Image 1 (cartoon, rainbow, N blue to C red):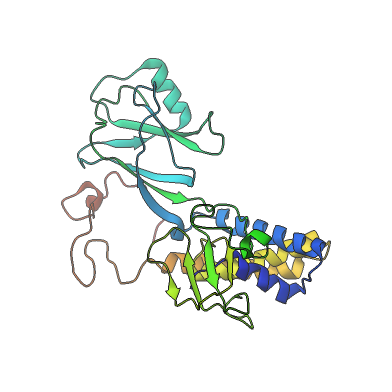
Image 2 (image 1 turned 90 degrees about the vertical axis):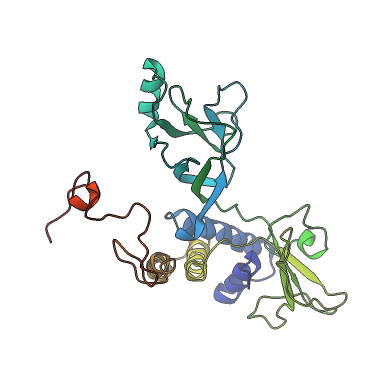
Length: 308
């Protein structure tokens, strides 16, 4: 099942008694958008980790400036094709000093992140010095956390129910199929959807759409199962805030759901037992693992920790 903005609106209508009046729909739409944004940006979720090749350099930058995709929230690492190439992150202040004084060839690849001046909603990756070791003919990658797009289609707009939204006009949205007589609702609705798919994503269709089925299109919620409850609670907080009600009770529930989402986000990617030097069950040493022959294993080059 794909989580969609339609589920969020239906939950708010069931939870706070939202009606068909235009003013109440505006409140529910605003609450859904703000609650989704709050949870998406409250931490760096493991669910949002992804990767992409480093795009082409900006023309005229001497191969030193790269405008990153618009969904980049922050970067974990710049990964060269040759593991012997040293890559190091520096702060924007250090980058400016290196640019002022210059570097000789053969230095490590120093990089930093700054806001793009030509496209204010995006980041740019900048290299310092003379990056001769960055070979443009080779494939460099970045690992980063993606930034979910703001909600736009909630499933109740005329365009969402008239068939106007397609893979061309609304790629990445969730389209749900009902029946020839009824529009589809969420899985908890009286008329649950019979099939669903993500527009523009081949092979994403789940179920068999009936002939002449009515459809509803809404934005995809880029959250895991454990994050969804926190999104619902965050939206309830915003409903209370927008209606001028006491938010203490809703905030308490939201904080509880958020803590549970934090715990599940740390646990979910770790499916088996791990040891510092060998992995279970294959007992293969992980890359760069500490052992008795490495400086890390001997305690060198490691930060001091608290006494056990």
